[in-house]
Image 1 (cartoon, helix red, strand yellow):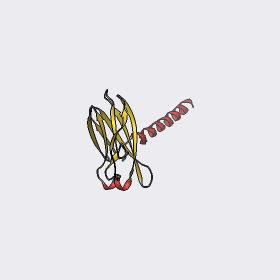
Image 2: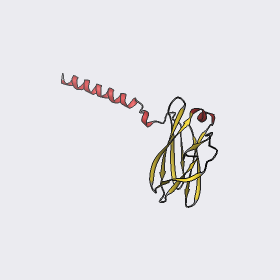
Image 3: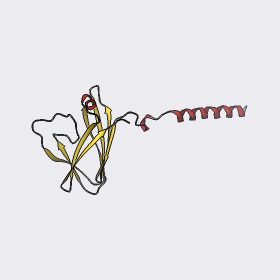
Length: 145
């Protein structure tokens, strides 16, 4: 009787482990989530697009300053992250807006209308920063893989 119980427990455990191994973990897979990335000697950026509501997407960017220098993110008409097709007001200026400390990370987000996202392929987000009195313009294509 004891051998039968051990055999049953072993069978149940093997079935459970086998079932768990075959299940896909959605948090570890990119699936069809649009994303983009950029890296230079100062910063690295990863951007992910998620549905915000029926008419908008939310683009979340993880930004790392992997240098030993402060960088200044520039606003473009009130936004650090801009995108193709965004309407700009009559009067827009770039200003030094946000300092990012050396060897630091932060997350920034922007809301994008779905109709603009789908009308520009590949869709691109843009950011600009200053370091050592030099302006760096970044354009990141957003793709689905």
